Image 1 (cartoon, rainbow, N blue to C red):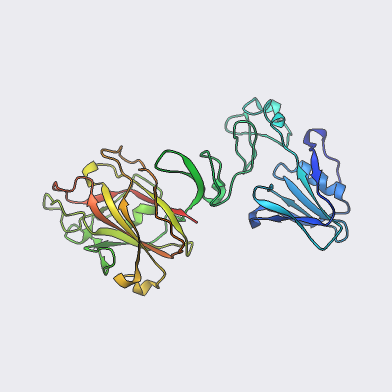
Image 2: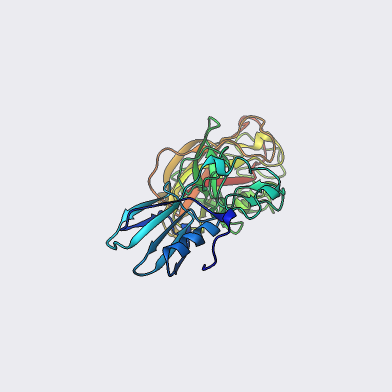
Length: 356
């Protein structure tokens, strides 16, 4: 930290009045917290760190903090210490326009853009994105977003598209890994007790190897195929798919489900779910088979279009405004895409739960 900043790393800083410090909105924004002999050394450290956008320094305690943050996701606040000050890196489009997407020689040892090892072109540093003129920091959960890469992907956030094809807000995919445990049900309606299904080829079964665990493995080449009221030896009936589904308790804990989307399976569009219900519960695992444990949150479309391309996601469906966080969720299919014709199973490959 005592070495002078190389000129190519130099930054223009804006300093607050004495008696202020930076208050980040999220713990992940703190780069590090150390001590330094002078404000000059710490402003140099910020200039040399491409992630640093804000720092604060207290000349009495010598506490120095670097933040990967700006005033869109944090605040400069007044504090009791009159020896504390905040420094902010001043950014402008002119710092980026001549370098972005140029050969790496244009941004070598530059704090504003980095050389991509995959494209060998100048790109935005980590946790930032190109908005057409600059590299602002990526956004945190529930923030309004306007393009696909605007959200913190390292925190499992995505900029979600609404039913009008517009980007809306940064949401988390609530299923954290392929090890989520989902339980198959059949002959179950919203508010009623769950009838658990098991693997097999008869009534009340799901096809062996195509169980409910496949819906959150983030692999559209696997699927969940439930026989419901039918079996593998019959041609099926119009009602095979009705009242089948699954429930799961999220590994990440209690969460607010805001939206969801489904991916189709590999074959037979008539087997796609069309209408579903979603319920939430905070009861313990031993009570989740009881209908009284569940609260209805949604009754509507699964977001799949007629003859949608196989192994692709449907449109994002948004739940009615809901402020209750739940640990467990139950999805039940009311109607298949071609209800009215004989189908032996209902099937889908992924269900993506979105919220925070």
